[in-house]
Length: 181
Image 1 (cartoon, rainbow, N blue to C red):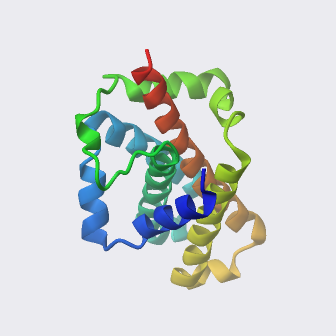
Image 2: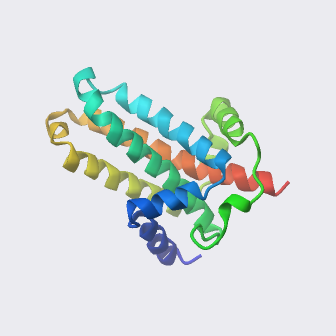
């Protein structure tokens, strides 16, 4: 595996224009989108639980976008690691489990997906962590009120963003495990 090449190709996906990212996202199977959306919503709710009510409304839109981008990015990284080009291939045409969201939820309820997270390559973990750092920096840059917040709040929001990225990767693992049966 050429890790540098994988990282460069993955970063290019984040640099796509918003309409191109949307088109790529919409090319995913409906079950995959549903599961990634569930992850993004869960991460957003958890992050908002740390935020004062007055600040929550201004962060809500940014957080749903950021957590969705994180879960989508984790999922795409999994595909790309296994030489599935999400731009060139018709991902929607692949066979999918009709209950991918239920599979993910069952794995999460069992042990927070540790059966999957624990076998992730450490280099992949570093890639996902870098994406999380970038999202956190964007939060600080685009939401000036966050500069005045305590470190613990920013750290908790960062953890929620990281969780979304890792869970997106897990969705890819679940999906491919299902196809191997």
